[in-house]
Image (cartoon, rainbow, N blue to C red; front, side, top):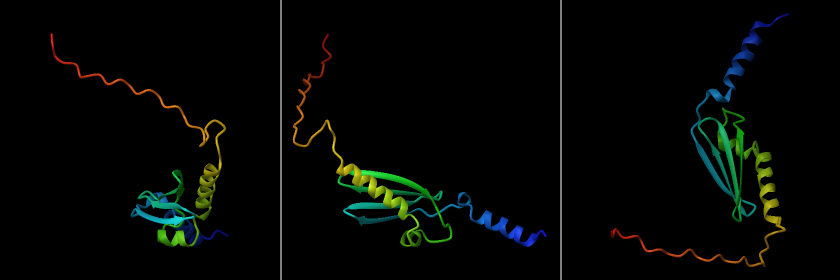
Length: 125
């Protein structure tokens, strides 16, 4: 048998949980993490941008807001975005631990000759 009450309830819940219909107050949370800096930004459109920087290397990822009725800080403390943060930290550490077969710290790159300085042209005829 068709239950009209549960159908309407599901439709209302679906409409309420659509993140695109909300405007959020932008928030930014910063913290030190594993020798680097983690910045989590909640944008007004519900997109969450996560930045991780360590030793001059920065990696960025975005996620959509998971629970629009929960405070952003609470979502972070409950580990909602931990998978994204873990992937960022792993990628930054992979870049830092890697090395190039072309560039080495012990090799000094030759400096190029400086460009000659020309005096400014005068308006002489």
